[in-house]
Image (tube, rainbow, N blue to C red):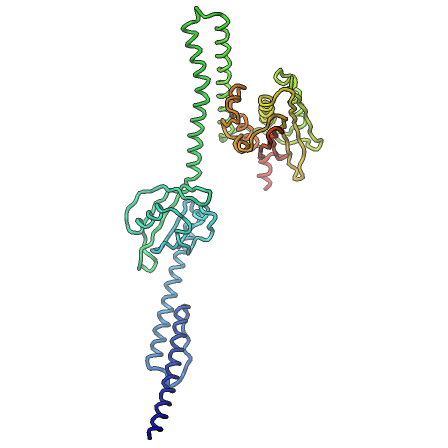
Length: 429
């Protein structure tokens, strides 16, 4: 009798375990369907199904369908919002309560080009600024904050952004998100710094000859009656020299101002570049300050005709030749070169056999008022604007200019110019 009871008990346990295993499998399948957001297809039949199983499946499926509908609605709203804001010039950013990015328009991606796929990333991974993240937190918390400016460092680049924000409810209404409008101020701040530096440098450069002129004139006014003739003549020559320097600085500043204006006055016409270089070479050979230099011109026959402004292009080569004459010793060689590249562009250069330029200075020599040897530049009458003018004119011709130099091996200023008017290229593109 005991044995029979044990057998019945064992059989009951086996049946119960099998039912539990089936129920566990069904619950696992249901859990996976919920996680995947997919409707659970209940095709099982049998007497072992719990009475509440089918109602449970129906309720869960209804919740999955509703959740998917809300998620799709939320996605559609964000998609519509992104489509609306995508073409704005201002950058737009939407973050949730955990600082995950839900919307980032094209303008924001342009500010941070190294992170192209911003959506679903944590904001901290993109903008590493404790002050900005604090601004985001306070804005999401409902504080009314004025527009603020932040500097964001990304590798070697510093972005300057101006941000205004407002809290917004999440699509499901259960949490607080935040929307921000971001203005990229990097270029504007850079231009402001350049403008400040330019004003400071220009003031300094103008102050030097003005101070000299003022000092010598005051001395002449006070002592011209008793001053020896030779000393008075020396004073007048110094005043004349600094007056000329002042005039040259002002003229170069006016030239740069015109070149940077909306109407720089570039008049393109067909010119024989070889003839232009030969004429400049002949002119400079006759100048007294070039008598002790060797000036040569080598232009390949294939250079032919290019479309350029002859006056402005002559100014470019004149500035480069003047620099070579000022900063090279007597008997130095100055070469004017031109040849055709495989691309059809023209490459021209002014090369000298002078002392060369240090490598650290090469990237800066086209900046306004930059001097490799400041004292010597002023002694030779340089304004520090010649190469900046060269760069502006070459760029207005659709070309570029750079320098190559080694200490003791001379310097080459190289120009690459399109053969045709760059405006013609723009019209044919």
